[in-house]
Length: 138
Length: 138
DNA sequence: ACTATTAGTTTACATTTGTAGTCAAATGCT
DNA sequence: AGCATTTGACTACAAATGTAAACTAATAGT
Image 1 (cartoon, rainbow over the protein chains, first blue to last red):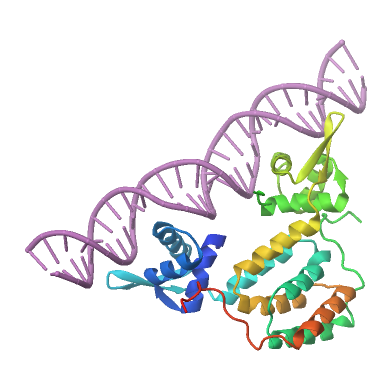
Image 2 (cartoon, protein in one colour; image 1 turned 180 degrees about the horizontal axis):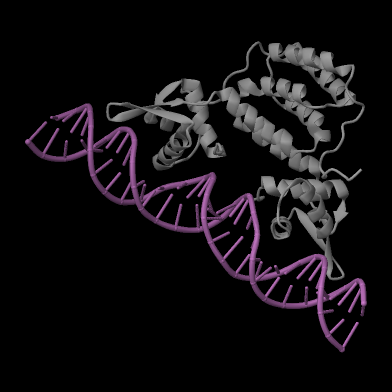
């Protein structure tokens, strides 16, 4: 039902989530600090996001103000679910370990993760079952 | 340089990684236990993976045996990097926390993650900087 | 030997995505 | 008032993707 937010569109969304309510000029300026995209390209991306229902365009005189119609959390969760649904269940732990190693995580988040682990470790399975194959007839 | 492995292609790869060396019949059978795809569709996907260099087709009489040319780890890492590069740095911790909560992770992996956290928590930042906007001129 | 089945190759086609040009309306500046 | 600029809408177009039919060569069973 919901059209996907493509990688290119994600960059637009991040700016809007961060700045709250912005005109296209602001989006273009911020994007072009990181990406070598033409104005046109960025405008197309904005339009598509409006059409897909992820951005609201509020007519402000002759220009528009854009704001996000989907919470950042929601989008992130769906993106994250995508990843973890794509890979083998057995590998989830390793992926998480690597992610923590490779990224900055705040002390608070680390503590939170510690708590979660503590609460799960006692009845954590010795091994996780591979879910890459279809169920075998039993 | 490297063509992406698309979501549909991923399902094929997972079967090959899991089974090691398989004929198309096995792939088709396993895929169809989970997905309602025609034989033709699956054969197309296999061909594309061969063309993209992710599967090796070893001619075995008139049929082929397929095997993976890229390690599962490598593919998973790149997929994972994709996710974490797409989202705001500030949210990485939350994503990880949620992932641990929502998935089975083996006791060993949990311990490993605990170790990593322990080694990082002391100089973990109070907050992580948002990286959604282009660098501001300073 | 003949036929049904199987596996691989080719072709097809709509949709999505990345990327951008063109144009017209609205605005601001002089 | 007239022109330069900005902004949004429309059009374009190749490549990638999901999805699958058609055709062909080989094989297995009878």
